[in-house]
Length: 124
Image 1 (tube, rainbow, N blue to C red):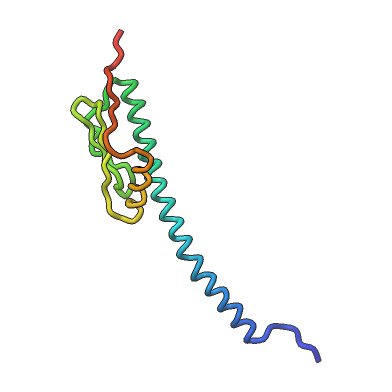
Image 2 (image 1 turned 135 degrees about the vertical axis):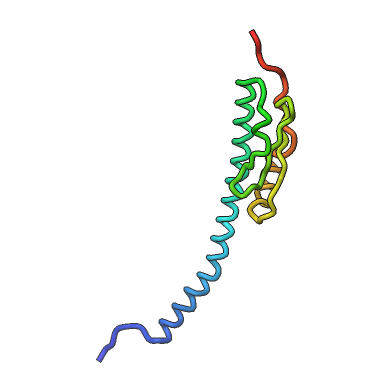
């Protein structure tokens, strides 16, 4: 009489292998999610700087009322305008793991510090 199926030892062996794979994969997936959040915050910063530059170009200055804008949902960066609206200072803020990674990315990209939109508005 021939029986088909798996023995208890084989089933336990498969469950142990799946457990080991899950123990390795879950932390890697969590790290990928953290990196994605940090990259998103850094890209939001670059977009913000570009948008402020476009606003300055079209209006001649950036208003001080935009000062102190939080540039990520978790507050990884803050902005401050000078009184004449030509200088923008981007500073790191926030101490979460996501913010620390985002600060590193923004620093390497040159997006932190003083941005001088300079010049004066065009008049006719």
